[in-house]
Image (cartoon, rainbow, N blue to C red):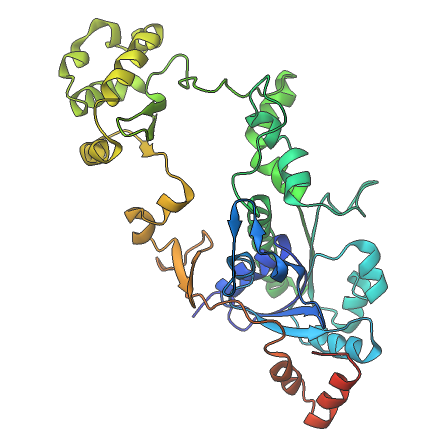
Length: 401
């Protein structure tokens, strides 16, 4: 049994952030009904070009990633008949999940007090760009603006002198992280309700998630009154630790060492790179000596690691005691044996999708593909007790798809 089986979630949300929270809840076993505009659906469905990627036809990963495992109903909330259907869905929900801005929540009658009037025990969960308080709480935004740029991530990654800013590494980067945060908050609120009977209003913003992701660096910066500065391109890494940095291999690939105690691991690294004499070199005999002679050690490691390919070093480093990793692009991740062993990529219909990072009982979630637009409208309506005459009336009125 999945942890959230029996929990009903009503999602009135668009794009990547809040729908990704619904996807995680669906992964955990909740029944998630996605309310989409009766004509246009979620605008994310029309996203075919993302940076360098162009998707032709279906399935479309741009919609599947954040909507797998849900059911879709096409509903016009602005029509009285559509609002009646929405109200009945609210009455039956454990969680009301929305990305709508405050003004639109009031316009459609789906703000906290509206939902609680219909369902006093519903968890009300909302995702925003900039948080529920302050003078900018009614403004919208995206992960690029609120998460990536405003929370300090872009500036902390961008080297001095570079024109512009480093962009996010992939689409919906901040959205997905923030959505997982929101799903976790909803799960905690469900536990509180089970224990106390009291529902919560759960808020997660892109800005707050960005600040949390940068939390260690922001705490240091505020404490020391100094902004983080990105290292110049090509810099090794730690200026006092040759075993904490990036190295090129013979085939133009890279690997990284992150061994925070170089004195503990130096001799083992020396043996694994076929340079056993380095283990007894007095320049590297202690952590203090290694720190003092880091430039020399870095030069030795750079020259040595350039003599073999990444695949060859990967085979040799299988028994290396200290932490290291290959630098992989997004396509190479799909061929990583450790990722496959842990089922961090899971098939959902025709696609393989990233599983949410939480596993229960050492098993990956079983994923279903995202629904086609409004595919379950009639099923959802019949489950509400509507007969076919009423469903036809609703369709004729344009209230449902």
